[in-house]
Image (cartoon, helix red, strand yellow):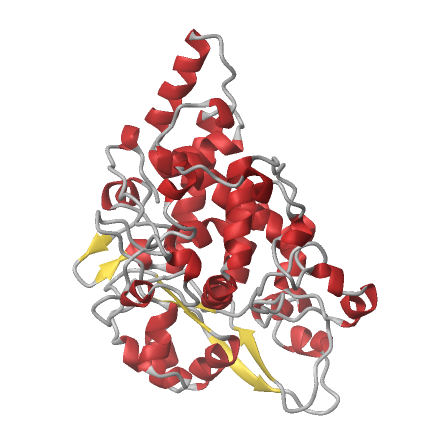
Length: 404
């Protein structure tokens, strides 16, 4: 969770899973009630005398269905998904220490939890990947909501941290999140993701380019991490993350992230974990609503239920967009197209699109020329990976002369 002591924000402490979580086969029911449960079992279990031999076994000993059973032929036949893309881009060093081994074991031995959380990530994970990648940040950061909120966009801790990124109110406001009656920016996927990455970049700069220090500070506050670094310097000790005297929660926060990243990086051939399959393509698209309107109205124009649209846009707690604000509403691409087909869409949307039905013989070059725009703009607006189109397809054609 976000807790910047030097930014006048107090963190919400993480609720750990119940002591018998390792023996349960389903995610704690409180996850679905909107409260925040951190991944991993109770931290005090680590302070009990562990079975060191068990903790130092090879990855193949973690679970009977490990990747030894996955042949290269099977891997070749599987279409790469988002997890494969992430795995190929993860490059943070993951030490082979006891705490990381513990959390890798916990994730592997609790497959139902991993499957449920990664399934919950499906609408948002590619969007977050796009934002992290656009800033050229470590791709491992896309997994922070796995540790922070178990990818529960409605997560709310008992000390007031909210949303996928678990912002407290003071820190959220410091990083530009609006929190007013009827709207909570901490739960807004678009704005909270932007704020979280702003905060991580800020901490990275403050800690001289050390990502482990920055991630630790995201959890416990920059002040605590700086104090720990100063204490180690005075004592002539190393100032790397693993040597710092930090709160117990933070000492396990970073290992949780690195453990999950390592499992993802080597899934399918070293570790067998049930990652919910997610296509490596956008799931949600933005539309900008510039007037106050009932979310249910936008949903109706889009062919979605109010509940479905709210699921993607949980920041609008009163069910209305904000007046005189740019409200970035997320919805699937097909529903975005349907929204702009509605005769009243222009009443509320900041963008202006025509919906064009592709006819046999049409080409993107032709459409771009007729509408005085570039092929790249058409491809970008419609998330086309190439110039292939087909008769009956609907394309959004932006009217650039009328957009703000």
